[in-house]
Image (cartoon, rainbow, N blue to C red; front, side, top):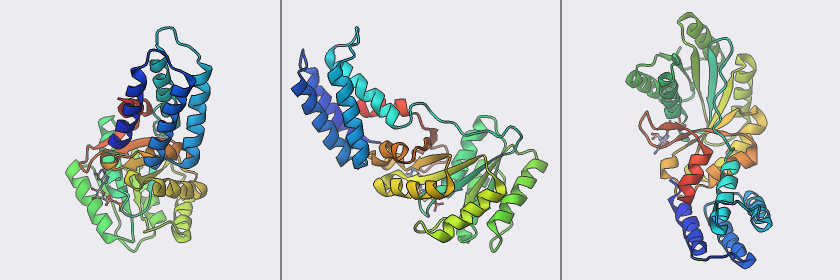
Length: 295
Ligand code: GDP
């Protein structure tokens, strides 16, 4: 995860570490390298520009820290700013005051929506929730089957009334079923498309208007970098997302989506997919991510 970016940044700071004192030229050279490393990691251009400007302002202004030498100080500033860029603190899902909490999973085909729905049920069950998974991807009968298989593996019930049904009606029936059967969490796997289009957005808008979910989570594939960020922008404009799940972080050596999506959409990454197994979903912690990047 982020190995390419991590290596580049760690190399940059290693050079600084050799120096006793830092001149403004040293800081500028390091920032130039940080900028290139971030651009090569496919971080959004404007995000990089603002990020480097903030670090320069703080590093050159030198709000000195008694216990740190100048190089440690610069690294601390970069760490803090990276953490801020990814949203600061971990952002949890909203729990409905009156159960069940309804979570609608949205996203394009292949991003990992169905797998992530199951992973999320698994994760939140470990935190004491009683989830019901809902198969509302009526365009891909294989997706319904896939969710049933995953639900079976986890021993989490999967609500389905089959294909050729209106996804909104499925959602409504599922919420009723959950309330009747003591489920305090409903996770709805919706239909995606190959790309963002008006039909998909209208369908999801309609579902959200009727169901009034507590959370709309967009699933995006980290490996697609700025494409994922652009998808998030488009979904957010129409659906006012509550958060993002970034999948396939295990295969992402660059980190461009992870570092851009919050700044571009204003919406936090709440969870990260880190493998194909059903326990490979983690709450997203910006500070731990920065530590991983800076070593
Ligand atoms: P959907 O079309 O959005 O519902 O996507 P799927 O849930 O079917 O996932 C597409 C593929 O991505 C599957 O092969 C998943 O196993 C894989 N996948 C999903 N999340 C992750 C992840 O975090 N890491 C890895 N390595 N693979 C993932």
